[in-house]
Image (cartoon, rainbow, N blue to C red; front, side, top):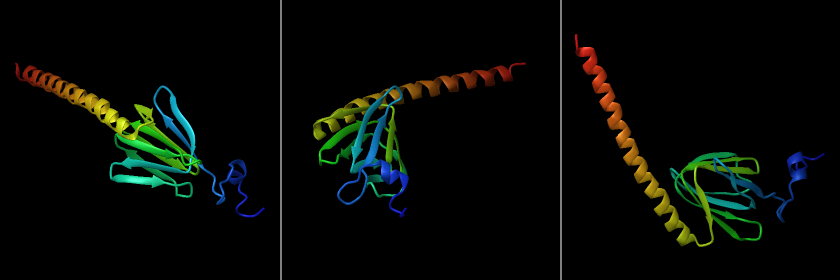
Length: 150
């Protein structure tokens, strides 16, 4: 058996260049939002945008809220808006794990929707964290006052 006939190559159909497509999952806490075959994935990490192709090395990246473009074997694009998350590429498998995501047809419309929905929640999170910090500071202050009393 030659080196190109590894078990993973035998189980995956190859394209004209002999490269099997990537299998992509977009995972939410409560469901699998998307499962697809892809020849290219474009996403944005904390340090900038990047593209993944089937022959790229294994890869892990923290993703920022934004758009992930998944190109299928026919050249069609699947547009997915995601909240912050993590992308893991291991062999031909790519998993994108995020708390919230949505699939759309219109890139500009989905970008606006992602910005609106995820930014609004982020503002609510900031307000909630501020309130929680004030409560924690108040509790600590009261403990200090209790220790100071004879």
